[in-house]
Image (cartoon, rainbow, N blue to C red; front, side, top):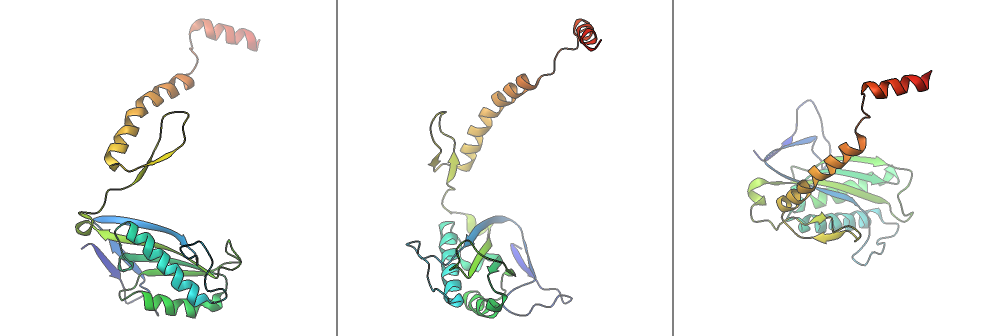
Length: 198
């Protein structure tokens, strides 16, 4: 079992979402809150929450594709909207975008989003099974460059990067211990301390 929708009889779910998911033996992909921007970074569908929701889901799809995943791999959505009355329109677009079993979903109304023209913002979590992960492109990680330079993006195997970081840890730990080592508690030091207190 790689993933399984949880639909207990004691919990009733109405609409295009599942009460929960159980996953194992794969990798998770976290998608930051997506907003109604197009590829040029411009707001779309001003005043139209359904149009904005479609753009948001398209952006989520693009992020997932970068990790070799699809909308069908999404197991959790968190939806933020500026007006709870937009709920039905957003739910309709969600139902058009996903197929049963639907992702688990939470929808909340907030006082405002970062841009007053945004009516909806959506986060997502996706799961890709271990079998589907085989043959996926290598991870792109952030690696520290030599002192005095800026951070740079380096495409390298995660294991290699972890080993490089680990190789620097013993030195850092020794330096940390040297800086934080307690003062000696020799009899001479204790006598000097007692004299100062007197």
